[in-house]
Length: 305
Ligand SMILES: [Zn+2]
Image (tube, rainbow, N blue to C red):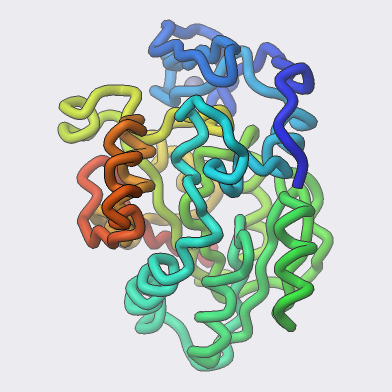
């Protein structure tokens, strides 16, 4: 992993990914890494998106930096990357989360069902799915994390820019995608691939933050999603439109549940001073198990017709 270099970050003007309109209102602007990031609301469909938007090369750069995977190690003073505070050291939280997600997924699938985890990171969910008797593989955009993960595990993890062509031909009984949807720079391309790679009647399990929920409004626009790699912010209505457009029908949409470390929660809230105090107490890895009233977890089915 390399250190983040601000000079590598470049922006492009983009249209709404869902409806193609460019009629927008400025929704929020924020400084990350000493650069101004703007989020606009599409007046036609309600999607919020980063515009101008970080280009693909910039995203690749961020995904391979030490700041992204382990902010603490990077020694940076700013808190903007703290959402990913020591991500790789939060193994126990992620294992607890995998168990919960398996409870949502298990009842709908047969033994040996073929599952793809999109945005699989180090393959933690893929491993849990394989242990449950499924045939699971993972795909992630980060070459650093995939290379590292493959050194340590026999799992089938593929490095791919999955917004373009997928380097696999097979179809799946289910595709999972957690904590990733906001990071896609062209979500419609990913939805198109999901439609193509799901068997008819196959399931798409994912989660997303909804900016229109009451808790999101109370906590404020900056709370839960804004970070440099966040390119899209959704609402339930917007997600329904994406699903409809790409032949998916929402079967279940419920308030999300997460197991996260206290340190990460403070990262979301951008209060690093409290984090320092927690570290002194040795409490930064304390687990929080909580419903996430700003977001939803979803199960959608690929229509057979
Ligand atoms: Zn739109």
